[in-house]
Length: 168
Image (cartoon, rainbow, N blue to C red):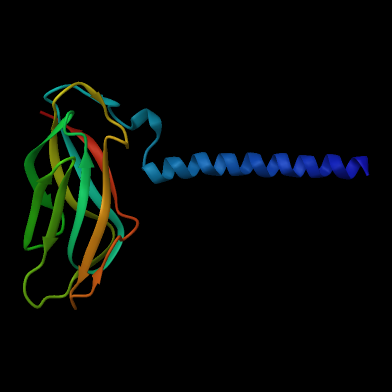
C-alpha cells in the first residue's frame, strides 16, 4: 500500500511537470519567438508602432469589421492603414473614444479571400509618451465578417494582433 501511494505521487508529479513544460513550450510557439528575440518592451515618445491584425484562417472572406482598442493618452493613430489582402477594394478606420473601428470589403461579384495564417491589415500609431509595449497595449474585439454570399458572422474568434516598433 505504501509503495502504491509513492507510485501515484510520482506519477502525479511527473504529469504536472510534463504539463508545465508543455504550457511553456506552447506559449513560445504561440508567440512565434523566444523571449530573447521578442524586441523592445517599451517605446519612447515619438516612436511609431505597427499593429498587424491576423487571423489563423479565413474562408471566403469578402469583408470584415473590428475594434482596435488602445489608450489614447499614450498612442495616436497616424492614419496609416494598409490591407494585407490584395483583393480588398476598400478599407477604412473610423475613430471613436478608445478605439478605431476598422473595416474593409471587396467590391462586385467576386469570391472571398481564403487562406491560413493570414495577415489582414496593418495600422501605424505613434507613442505620445514613454510607455511599455505589451499585449495589453492594444487589443482587438468585436470581429465581424461577411462572406461573398453576404452571410454575416458576428464576434468571430481567433483574430489576433501583433505589435512592432517601426524603424526610422
